[in-house]
Length: 170
Image 1 (spheres, rainbow, N blue to C red):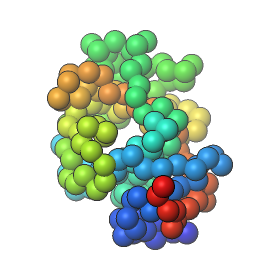
Image 2: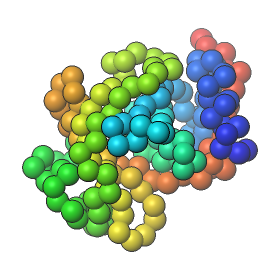
Image 3: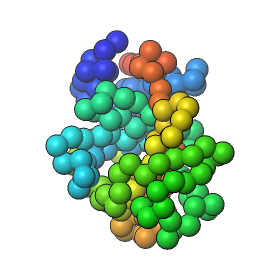
């Protein structure tokens, strides 16, 4: 399946009818939002939160998918004062370089679910691995609660994600 076909299917199929299979595990969508940010206004990215608190990040312009088993993350080893100021950060024994400083996220559309089930507006900075596999480390704060809203996810190939459709709700 091509990336455009994948994204079109996500938008055109009722979310309650979609299940994705990631790492061999069926995933049910809890919330789905289309987002943009101050530093990324010409593009958009999507976040899907699943009922098991895993999530999928789709970077539309780059046609990339990033996945994590952990949606709610507060990386306590990285202090608030370091975010967006420290050029190199270590997480899970990997070094990450600041690549997107002091950004602000906006919701373009809540496609599915409650706004309480997916992060909305937030202030953040993104870090990318200096070496090794491609990953995404985003550190920030939710605007509504001022609580940390960190994400760490790894690149996922499209052929590693399977659509399971026409599931009947019980």
